[in-house]
Image 1 (cartoon, rainbow, N blue to C red):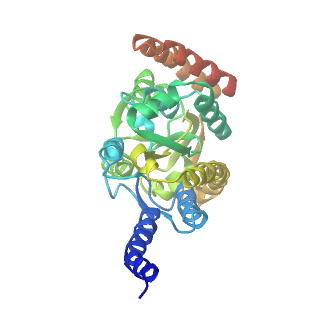
Image 2 (cartoon, rainbow, N blue to C red):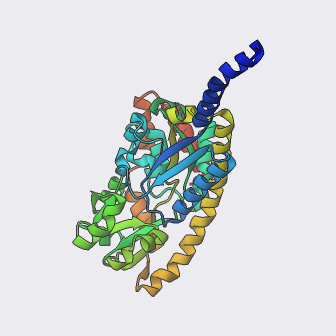
Image 3 (cartoon, rainbow, N blue to C red):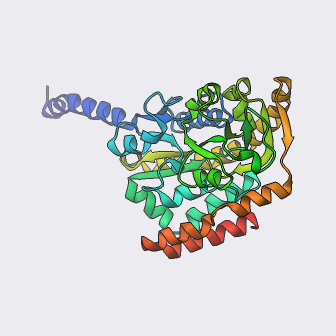
Length: 341
């Protein structure tokens, strides 16, 4: 064997190993912790997103979704991302007001939006125009890919409630730090429950009411334990975000990262339309299940809003104390522009 052939023969095993190693590095499986069940309109969009990522990266990036808190409770998701226990999470920032006050605000401040598309426009503008939103994700070691939508959270109760006075003494499921104050303003008692606990909470009397979207009332079978829906929007805004840890993001190539971002934008648009359609379909389903829809007079809704704390002013004051007052004022200014309030 001549010298050239000997060198090629010696180098071949190394080349094979390097090629195999490169292929292995190119294939990434990302584990996503999901707080919702897989039958929600938004969850179906997430399945589409995962499938599209695998297809558009030619199988190099796969996303494995673990539904309904299978990898951890909703309030554990941020820590799981930061610890590397999961790579991605479908996570509501409203559960983390201390760590993510700016992202948590649109996800938790009640009675300030009227239409589902408001959430789309608000988050798009906040993330582009207010620097603190990028700083907040960087500080927490995560990145936001896109946000889901929810239909208006109406007043869902075991007994009909059609006035502010009717809320007195009622126990209502809440989350975050602002929803409890909204309930207290109407004379009710806030009770913190996670999503999977709502059904049992209503069934066992731990709560009398729960703000919930009509399509979620169907998906979680809440109609079995609460058959009254009052037409007042207690909360509406951006819902669960799809987040990826910075360490997982850094494993991706620039091309893969670009695919994730662009596919996320498409997913958000699909999600908005799917959620609105699911809400429309749910109303007839609930009527078939024996649910009664009640008017909540506009004057009573205005009375409740007037009784609420000034959530916007309180948010600005709190952020002022942390040195982020200018970002808070910009946030609320954009919020009011988007919603016309």
